[in-house]
Length: 437
Image 1 (cartoon, one colour):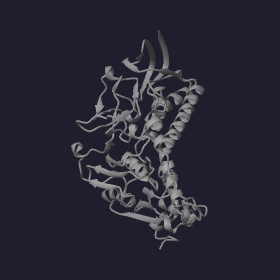
Image 2 (cartoon, one colour):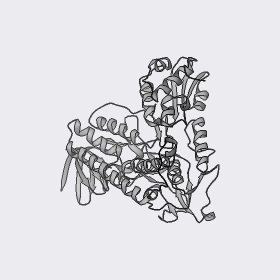
Image 3 (cartoon, helix red, strand yellow):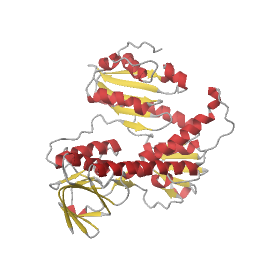
Image 4 (cartoon, one colour):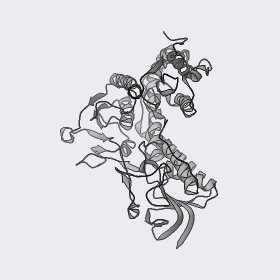
């Protein structure tokens, strides 16, 4: 049996399902091939389930401090099994939501493992699917260390760590990137003795050093041990070990295309075209920044281009949200990067402790940092504090629309609110701070 489509998308993660929906909106006949659940790593094994567990541990930590608000609770505990069940229910609900969106847009979901036999031809089981264009969105898988395999007992992947129903007494985390730090926060809240091994000189590579310094102090208070510049020796420990050393693009099913690669990723141009005509690729398969919102945007660009568009994708001004406690929001150049690229920079900071809303809500730890050049151009904004992942959205709009630091400082905010702190940081960079000490 042979079916013909205008566009076939291989992989139903963030880049894939968004590409399918966008192409369908443009009037194309679209098929989406997915061997597992739609939503990909982000929805099923990453962003959403991790944040669901963090919501539980954050609330647990707050309840333990309820007496600060005049509330008596007595002894409290967290049932990890129930938290995991809640996480699974949330994931299932959102997966159904994505399936509904695909069906509403008349995207045909083909269940199974797809193998690209040739440009324009994909086989799924015994079914051949033909298409004028193909978008590859096969995602990535957790990377492991040489000589080690994930056994779900001693050596765990991030996928495995999301399903533990009992907190281990001790846990080694190999890798001090975003994924490793998320799990360090989760399990330290549950009383696990956590040790982070990071081969690089510091944790959270790519994040502003001042923000990283505060994260390390917070982890220190949680008694998380951080060993930087240290390679993990698997033979030296009998404890459970969570390996978070990045992710590897999944090239399964596309070997026949003999695509050009860039390192372990599929090489694409700015239009997200591969080396083979009519074949595009998005998401973790190609991205230098493996983030769901990067995949979303790439999915839109690739879908439009596959149907005749001329759009391009840029890695400039991509925001980062990290759900530590408190949260981190970041966009643009770090202070170190800015000093390396510009002769003169201006830095404005504002501490959360000086915000009335932070004092009222008991969320006084954090800082907002605005970096600009000598002409007022905003180079970067870095936030650690309550609602940082929401607050960074204002900075995203500012950088995307090329607002100056003067314009950001002039967009006064409601009181009391966290956005006041961003305005104050912008004012501070101009030496016009009103509430800075």
